[in-house]
Image 1 (cartoon, rainbow, N blue to C red):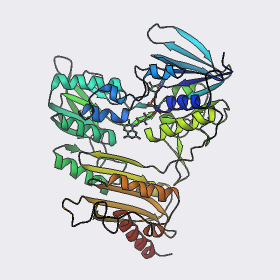
Image 2: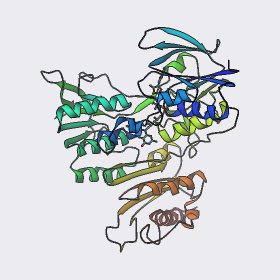
Image 3: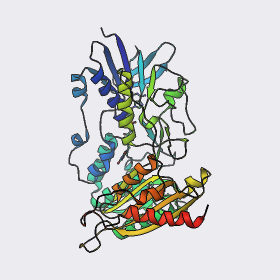
Image 4: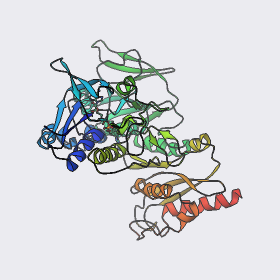
Length: 459
Ligand SMILES: Cc1cc2nc3c(=O)[nH]c(=O)nc-3n(C[C@H](O)[C@H](O)[C@H](O)COP(=O)(O)OP(=O)(O)OC[C@H]3O[C@@H](n4cnc5c(N)ncnc54)[C@H](O)[C@@H]3O)c2cc1C
C-alpha cells in the first residue's frame, strides 16, 4: 500500500497533467493516484475540435494525447464514466458515482486536485435541445456534430456566438460546404478585441462569404416535422438552419467545490494561491478552467478558459503534490485564433478593460506587412497598441492580419510580463530578414507610434 493517496477530479488537461507530473516525482509505492472522469474521453484536445469538424484532422483518436490505458500503465488509476458528486473536506474523502453501474462509493484522499474545467453556457431557450443543435466542448460534442453534418451534408449552418470558438467553427462549417451565418450580441465579432479591430475580423468573414449579424439576441430555435432544428429566431429575424452550433462562452464548473465550501472568486472560479493550492485548504489544489487567475496587468483575478493555462497549472500542481516546487504567477491575457487565412491575436487590456481598471491610456494603430513589402504576397497586418498615459507602460496589443500576424503577439506578451514601456520596446532586438519581417517589425512600428502618442499626451 502506498504511503499517500492523491485523488484527481477531472481527467483532461489540468487533471491528467497534474497526475502525470506527480507520478514523475513519486512512484506507486509512495503515491497512489486515483482520477475520476465522468466523460468518455480523457487527456484530449478540445482545441482541435474545430479542425476535426472542418476535416483538417482525420480521426478522433488524433485528438487524444494519452488514452486511459496509457495512464493506467503508468500506475494512474483513471476511472472513466465516474463522476465525483461530493467532496467531504472534513473527512478528506470524495463520493463518486459509477455512471454505468449507478453505484456510489467514497474514496479517501491525502491530497486532492480539482480540475473540473468549465461548463458551456446553454441558455434555456425553446428548442435548444433539438437534434441538430450542438455545443462544442467535448469530443462527444464533436462526434455528434460530425454525425449531423453527415446527415445534412451541406446546407445552412447557424453559429451562435462570435468568440474564438464561434469563429473557428464558422470556418470549419464553411470548409464543409455550408452556407454559414454567425449571430452574436456585440457590435463586432471577437469581442475579446476592441470593436475597431473586431471590424477587421468582420470584414474578413464577409470576404469569405460568412454572414455575420451583430446585436442579435436569439429567442427561440424552431424544429421541423422530424423534430430536428429548422431555424434560429432572433428578436427581429428568422435564420433557416440545418445545423446550429452554440459557442456562447463558458463558466467555471465549480458547483461541486462550492457545495464543499471552497472559496470562489467574483467570476465563480476557485481561488488559489500561487502554488495553485486552494486558499485556506492545505491538501487541496485546483487548476485549469475551474479557477480564477491573477491578471498581471491589472492585479485582479479573471476567469480565462484556455488550455495553455490548464496544462501549466497541471504541471505545477503535480510538481507541488509530488514534493517538488512550482508557482503560477498569473497571466497577461494572451490568445490567438484565426478564421481561414486571417489571424487574430490579443494580449493585455482592451480599451474598455483599461478604463474599467482606472487606467488612462493612449492608443496607436498601424498597418504594415509581415515580410519585406517588396516580396510577392507580403501579408498585411494591423497592430493596435495601448500604453499607459504618462508612464508609457505597455497595456495591451491586438493584431489582425495574414500569415505570421498572430504569433507576433508573443513579443507583446513578454513585454507586458516584463512591464516594459512602449519606448523600451522600440529597441527590442528582434530578428530580421526579408522573408520574416520588414526591417522594422510591425510590433516595433506600433511601439514607435505609441511612444509618440505617450509623449504627445504629455506628463
Ligand atoms: C472548441 C474548443 C477550442 C479550443 N481552442 C483552444 C485553443 O486554441 N487554445 C487554448 O489555449 N485553449 C483552447 N480551448 C480551451 C481548452 O480546451 C480548455 O481551456 C482546456 O481543455 C481546459 O482544461 P481543463 O482540464 O481545465 O478542463 P476540461 O478540459 O474541461 O476538463 C475537465 C474534465 O473534468 C471532467 N469533470 C467535470 N466535473 C467532473 C466531476 N464532478 N467528476 C468527474 N469528472 C468531472 C469533465 O468531464 C472534463 O473532461 C478550446 C476549447 C474548445 C471547447
